[in-house]
Amino acid sequence: MHYVIGDVHGCFDELMALLSKIDAADEDATIIFVGDFIDRGPKVMEVLAWAMEHIRPLGKYQAVRGNHEQLVIEWFGQFMIWWEERTAGGCHLPMPKTHYDFWQQMAYTKQLSPGKLTPYIQFFEGLPFSRQLTVQSAYGRTMTYRIVHAWYDVQEPQDSEKQHFCNIWERNYYGKAHTDEVFIHGHTPTIVREYYVPGMFIFGDAPGMACYRPGAVNLDGGCCFSPYYNNFPCMLCALCLETLEEIYPYTLEERFAQKIQPDMTDQADAKQMADEYLGRYRKKTPLPRLKLLKQMGAV
Image 1 (tube, rainbow, N blue to C red):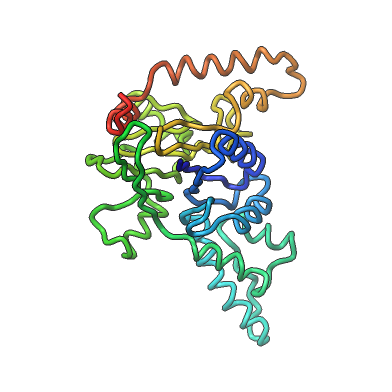
Image 2: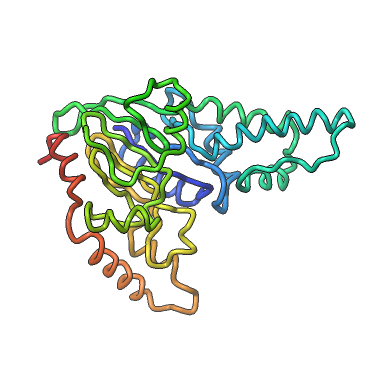
């Protein structure tokens, strides 16, 4: 079966735990990432090394491009101009820096040179902007998915600049009207108030987990922000396209236990936090999820 995983952002431990869960249940799984492997998280280099070793266009592990990869591609062009001018002795300006911490990761590992940076850039450039995938659901219906980092504009040609900008940058808070092609995306963390506050009342959101909109599923649970949000699980999210099953690296109780300070030894607190979260955000199945289950023949 096919599984899509949301924004990783250097969360290597969560990624390994999630992949282990998926492989234990389905050793023939095909796994597709929505991009944003780098920046923000604690183990960016470990994630990047794993991704470059395993991800292939038609392999077991695949991916589309995220805006953080795109930012590094654009930065590399500026870096090369600076490098060539500096080498020629005609540049006294400081080295251009990436918007986020990729350049710091490269500096710390002594890889800020064209030869060492090029394999990373080639890997990023090899990631497509979007991916269309048609599968047979576990309930007998044919489902067509559009896997993309941010969003997809059905009015634009697939290879246009406007489409590519939409693919990696657009933020959509309310889904789309037509649902023949289901969008699976990340980019906007489901812990962002602008996203989950209206969604909580209209769609039944669970911030920090997979969230649903008409014709779309957002898999950016904001995993890398977990240390700063004690009231949300901030999970690394995966979704099975054939069944719509959500998979997470940890149970809610395990995730909340990770957030409890060492001096709070009573693990009942973690269970209480998980129960309170479920009582507030997961009392019932979100309506857009029910519609997707109906579309794939599950209900």
